[in-house]
Each structure stands twice: as structure tokens, then as C-alpha cells.
Image 1 (tube, rainbow, N blue to C red):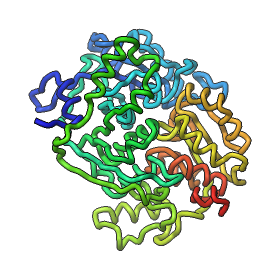
Image 2 (cartoon, rainbow, N blue to C red; image 1 turned 30 degrees about the horizontal axis):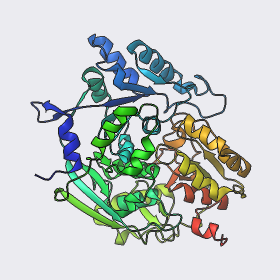
Image 3 (cartoon, helix red, strand yellow; image 1 turned 45 degrees about the horizontal axis):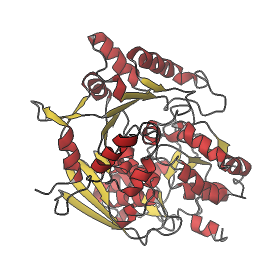
Image 4 (cartoon, rainbow, N blue to C red; image 1 turned 45 degrees about the vertical axis):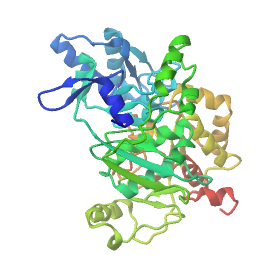
Length: 469
């Protein structure tokens, strides 16, 4: 019987079924971060249970670490206890920690694929919503709560209700200055924040095949924003080339065996999905959010919509968003004055993201009155960017160049905007107060964010690069 790639990975890792109907799924790799790990370590100590597979468990310091140069444990005082508890718990349990001063430190969803911890066809869990980022290399990944995290630490298995299967067919050639971030925002706009609820989503199509691996990870990162349980892309030769030689990836004969298996990881031609959706990406323009959830999106040349044309099920949320964002129906997004730009997060903080932004910024200056920040997703990304001179491009333009971490994505390290500020951000969520009390966040791609920093207002990067703005 023809099977989807999701079915193949799920069934291969199926341990059994619980009495409550949930499946027990074996987890190949488990990555912790400092905000939640100490809860799990404390609970296991109370129960006098060891970590089942410390060799398959890894830990990062990412959410609360300061981004200022010369940082240490106490640079962000509110994060000090989390950082120290993570260090002590990891050492006590024999877990490899990418600590604040580790050369590979960074955001979990950036570090794990970057060093080869997570691989095609593998299962992966992180106590963070955006775990499915690594679906960009063909892994099946799940975010988990603190109780689930503790269960995985104790058993190396996760209890899950088997998701339904969705295929998102994304075809067409992306235009210049349009990226996976724009594709993801448009898809969320069309399906809504609950459009993928209960589904594992396989992204496929010619637009996907043409995307670099880093953009595939951006797309899968945003899967949770339309409610998807997990999101992934079948691995291909580009995936294998990207993974080859990474520190934790297989070597020698093991690489050859792994590669032979990875090449079988595709949905069968006649496999059936519970739902199929499609998006023609060829006419897509840069996208940007206008509201307070990631589905409230328009093209950069568009206007804030009239409530009368919004689906009744979304109208109440839209009216609330108008009030919070200080916008009126019919307002053009392009040209709206801004106060802040943030380029970073697990969504858009890899070297190609920074290269795109630097190409826009090069030879220009951040507009007066705008605070602009670039925070690489890992220390490895930071080093590579500095070797390429990208940091000098940003510094010369007036950007802050930070140490790696989650930074302003959720503001857990103190990087926040001031009340009332309007911010263009490459992050994944624009919820009320997420980037600071009363901060008004517009989600966009690195190219759009960079162009907006230069213009001092929401900008169409295509016009800026053409010399029109």
C-alpha cells in the first residue's frame, strides 16, 4: 500500500500505543533549553529516575542569554538562575551542553541541524514551539511541554496522538527579493492560524526544490503558526550535500549507509493525504503582517483590509488588532513610519539570511530615529558572517551586531522595544506585547526588514534596490 513520508517515519519509530489511545514514539534526539530544562531535572530527582539516554540528549543556552558583546552569566540578571541551573543539571546528568561560551552555542533550532545532531528521517523533540524548523532537512520534529519533556528525559519516548497528513504543494519560481518567509506568511494568511491544526504537513513542489536548505528551515519553522503539529520536506541531494561533513553527521561507511536510507525517504507516488492545499508562488510579492497574529498578512503593496471583507470567523480578531496596532482599514503598509528593526531568531538568523540583509544595507545608513539590530542564530553563524565581513556592513550602516541567542524574538533576555514602538521583525510571532509591552510588530523577511531600517518606514525592498526609494 502506498505510504506518505510521514507514515514511514512515524511507523519506523512507533514503540507502542497507550491505553489513552496515544502512540509512544521513540525520539532520536532531544534538545533542551534553559527556560524549561531545570523543571525536568528537578522532577526526575524527586522521582529518583535517571535521564534514559544522556548520549542522545543535548542542551543549549539560548532564550535568556544576553546579546551584548562581552556577556557573561550575569549580563542579563533575570536569566542568571536559568543559565546556572542548566549548566548544573546538564553536568549532573552527563548531557552535552552548548554553554554560553561554547564555540557552537546558539538557538537550539539553528545549532541542531548546523552540527548534524538531527538528520533526515529522524524524530526530534524540543521544549519549544518551533521544533519543526529542522523539518527542512527531512526530520519529524515536535515541540513539547514541560511534562512531555520530562517524560522524554526519563523514557526517550514521547506520547502523541497520531496527526493527520497534509501536503502543501508550493509551485512556481520565486521573484527577486521574495523568499521562503514570504511564502510561509502567504500560506498562513490563506489557511489561517488553525488551518494546519491536527496535521503533520509535508511541503512539496517546484518552489521547495529550488529553495536553499536554510530557506526550507524558515518555511518549516513557521508551520506551528498555522497550527501544524509538525512540518517537513522530503530530503534530496541538496540536503545531503548540506549535511555532509558536519560534526555529528555519520562518517565513512556509516555515511554511505545513511545516504542509502535517506534516499528512500519520500512519499510514494500514489500515497493519499487527508488534506491537500496548493499555492502558486510565481506571482508572490514580499509579504508583511499588519495585525497581531501571523495570518493577518498583506503583500507589501497592499493595504490594511476593511473588516467588511474579512471572513466573519476572523473579524473580531481583526478589529482587536486594528486597535492594538494603531491602524485604520485602508492604510497602505508601505510608507508607515517605524522605530525599530530586528533581524534574527530561529526563523531568519542563518548566514544566507544575513547575506540577503547585508546586500540591501551595503553602502547605506539606518534612518535617523530607528534602532536596528542583527543577532546571529549561533556562534558559528556569527563567526562565518564576520569572516565574510557582513558584521562590518551592518555596523557601518548603524546596526547593533550582537552575540548569538533568541534575543528580541520573545524578549526573554531583555532585548525589547519601548511601548508604542512600531517594529519590523524577522521573527515568527507578532502577538500583543511579545517584543515588549505595547510594541507593534510587523513580521517580514530579512530583505524587507533591512530595507525598512534604511527607509525609516515599512519599505518595498524591490523599489529600494531599483533606486526608487
